[in-house]
Image (tube, rainbow, N blue to C red; front, side, top):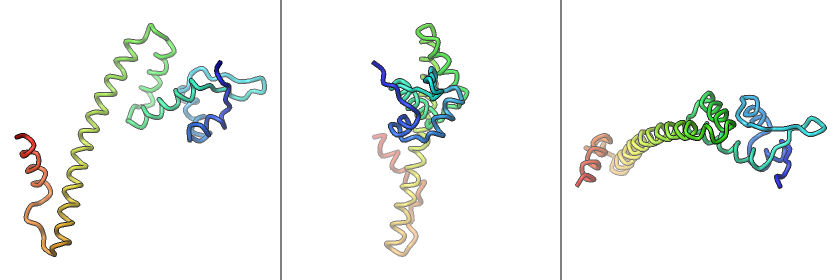
Length: 143
């Protein structure tokens, strides 16, 4: 049996503010929220999970428009499974590309920190600059 939760309980369970939860609902991103006899919103574990998904999609760069589209497709049930699948596959590919770019950026930042560590330790500017350190590492990995 689903447990009825009010917005304060959802906020406490998810670590999100009441304001954030209301914002997601106003954006049409939390489907199926009902109200009780007193007019208060009533949520369930389903809504808690759905809110988590929406925040994860948003934090990985999915636009609000795409999130609305996904929500609409989900409300259509099994008839829209292939469309939901395709939308998430496309998003997954974009996220993987971003992760690759961030991993490369992180490697350069690390090489720059290493460069500064050597410079501060020796008092002299290292001969091998950060970009060359990365190229050297990449060529060693190929073998």
